[in-house]
Image 1 (cartoon, one colour):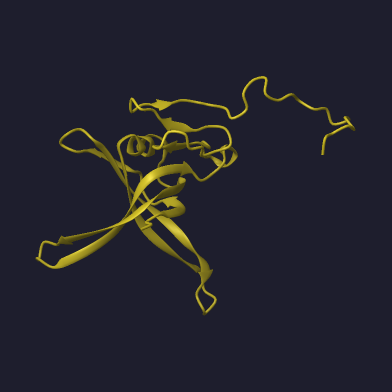
Image 2 (cartoon, one colour):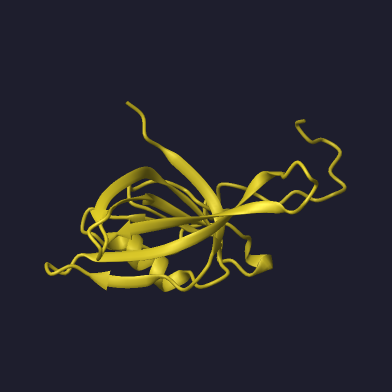
Length: 162
């Protein structure tokens, strides 16, 4: 079976970071995600408000680096929960349980261009990534271009290999 979802939208409020009784971090946030199409009457695009939850280091990352209005890309799974309200009525809620959360904007437009990937090794931006380590921490700035792997070419070089 496959349960994988990827959504991109803006946070509707600052993430709420809480801890379970055992100290596990969990961040809750909502993304406003525009639909790709307009209504038939030519009106504005509709927006879906999707609840998301991020656990452990991913939750701490979201809480630290995202705030209301931030563009985020969330990759995870859809989870449905059944519960009862105060009046005893049965309710059902859908939420995205985030495995990975990425910045959805470049540095130039206000984002920080990195990601947190709990699977240790994912890459989520042009210049930075925050990857989970087995110890539970994160590894800071890593440039995909290592010091001497590339050299600068001048514009007047006519012998380019392509």
